[in-house]
Length: 584
Image 1 (cartoon, rainbow, N blue to C red):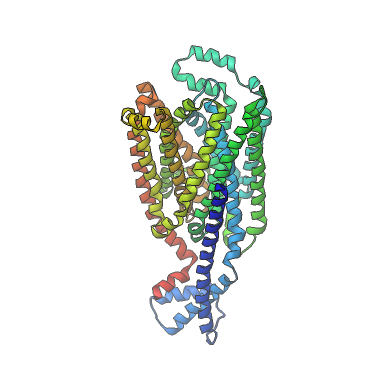
Image 2: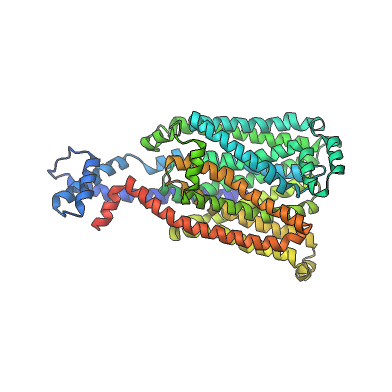
């Protein structure tokens, strides 16, 4: 019943937004149709091209206010809008934006399954725990992300982005399918347990997480590729493709709606994970419970991944070739197979770009902030749910709750963008992290203060910490999915092709792991100095505040640059609208 209500709300919201967009554009067409009618009796020559008439009108406007110049500009407006009239907004919306939303739905459905599964694998593995996560993010995830970025840039220089999409997707799906069917059934042969026992006895305690990574190296590999799915498939492949074929105006209207569809995916994938966990409970004694779950989970990932590739093929065949959906000139630029800059030149270019640096600061700031609060929470989560079945079921419910909360937050996303703009929307996520993080760290630092509350609620301090941490993560991720991600992706749209391709790869694929690795490295240093994560908590809270202040400053700086670049882009694409504002 609850899911039916959610789906009904989403459908109604999409219909309302689409109708609003259609009415708005219909009014614009009616306005220019009236201009066309007023010019139908004019004897002015229309042999000049629209571009020539537009240029003449705009250049002469400030010098001569003659009737002839005004008439020429109006005839150019009529000619331009005559082309717009042949592009029904509803048809364009359904044909282009609906498949894009479906792609994001499928990609995030898989990501939720992979994210929940990777945590269960590494946290509940023999000789492992939540303490392994900072080391994984620093010494495995970050080098892997850098290596992928180099390989991705090389592929982009040799072939089209469409081919790169299918190559990367095939590699990911091939590994996840093989993990459940080939790798996991043979972990007793692949994991060097005896060798790691010797290392554990010989090395200091500080190296225990490193030995755990080596002991469970296949789990670490799965964890890394599951993380890369979020950075590569979600941020780089999907959003990179979407930004190339979507205008700024379309993004402002429909990117929040993409989030609606995406978070319905979180709800359903979370419930699927929980359903699979319950199936494990009903198997016969002695059966490989987790192995059976992996087959079901990875089978869904591969099947949905095939659907993603099918949607991409549809977009290439029917959408990108339709001038009503995608500007042919823009699509020709998108299909450019090579870039002229080398990796070294690109790195130098990005380092000298304040716009890209601020974007990277946003991504790195989020990665560091969420990592600082998340690792502590997961250590308490393992203590509360040591059994993989219970842990996986809790993560399924967590993902569902995240989807529902984000879905509700999405309803206000478009209103925030419309009334307050990009700048305010970009600040909501860091402020949310700051306030919820303060609540979580207060519970950890002052347990005595919360003891009466715990007693009245009839629970334990551990479970209260798990619940507060879950609420913190749900609200933070909800703000990220509903506002931070759309803000970040909108910021790429006004950039040139080189900055989009190389900048997005550097910011999303390297920046996100760098942020998480930076947070992990800080935790490692503090644990080494103070002896435990609990003793490091006060200092981590202070560092969290400093990171978020840096994040907020970068968001403010980027907002000014985004407004300027967006105005420049609009002047290039719609000079007639700029001229009309001057006339008014």
